[in-house]
Image (cartoon, rainbow, N blue to C red; front, side, top):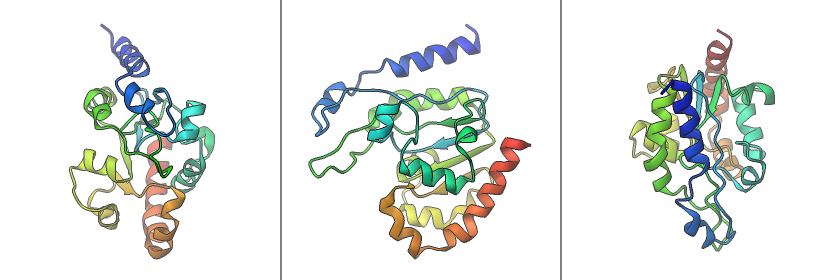
Length: 201
């Protein structure tokens, strides 16, 4: 079997996955699985996040929401560059929108998704030039850390330039950004420079 066929079969398996159908049906949104798959083996930049949001569940493209707008701003990427699937892979810890709880807050990504698919996708991507870990779920899986996101991001230099860690770009973290101005003043310029080197080098 060719490498290309392996990738095709892997993507088809993820798109057809219904492991969490009953779990999603029991949420406040009572939705059906819709895995959002966005990667190719040619990718040089990996964005590893948490899980698609409600809007992404509708569009079928990652980060088509205000969080995505903020993330693109952080990365210094316009929309065409961000969605260049030949160069940029977006692989969350769960491929489907997990739904809302009774308070309409996002539920966490079901661990069964990462256990089933994440290792296979990482093996297919291989050794990408740059990985950006967005939020605590991705940071814990990829780095094996147990520290809070704030502490992990504060120690970003110990992972750079191969890996960068950032908080989730949700509006909920706006207060955190105001309390930690070093993130935008120190980390982001280095990250943006590294992204340009990787994508344009």
